Length: 185
Image (cartoon, rainbow, N blue to C red):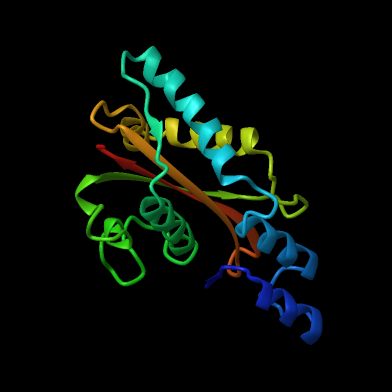
């Protein structure tokens, strides 16, 4: 079972003692800060990843992709990042397709999703270096035929990215989880 670590979990660990299926309290606090963007700029993460994607698109004769500033899409992307920490799939925890995480008014333009799960060494604190994290996502997605195709698809015009850190109790370690949403407008 995977848990999205939150401030309430941090408090429970600090005042109730460490449970066997949770990271040390310092790790829980770090994850909470990461997930609430107190330490990580999601905007800078988007900008850094788009630089890498657009360099690849240019090398392949494809027009650049732009950052999505639409609040409805950014909120849905963040929701999907939280969901993939629980169910790592293009399907939501309720079994519906990823695009149902977004309001119906924007669903027609949402056409693609990349998801990523990457382990963090047990001795490592989750990084908040946006360039490093963007490179991590880009490299992993570029190595996958389908994810790379999404990054290079000419009809995809805009992109939104969100990233979370969660503790996997089965593996007893933290993971980065990322979601990239693509739209045609």
